[in-house]
Length: 83
Image (cartoon, rainbow, N blue to C red):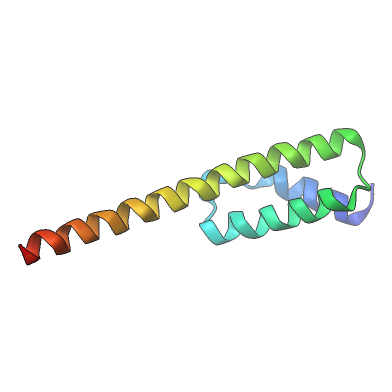
């Protein structure tokens, strides 16, 4: 296994998704996609990367949904105060 494959595998296993900020999840997702696009991995490693990418995308979506909810609440408060 080369250094890139080892480091990607290690970081995938070591990092709990619930502790990642949006930016951390997004940056790792970009790295996972880039590694998958290179196409030089074994099938098993590619599947593990794909699964990690799906989980990272889900984490990013959670952050974005939360951000939208906060914006919607702020807008509702602003509108209620204006009325």
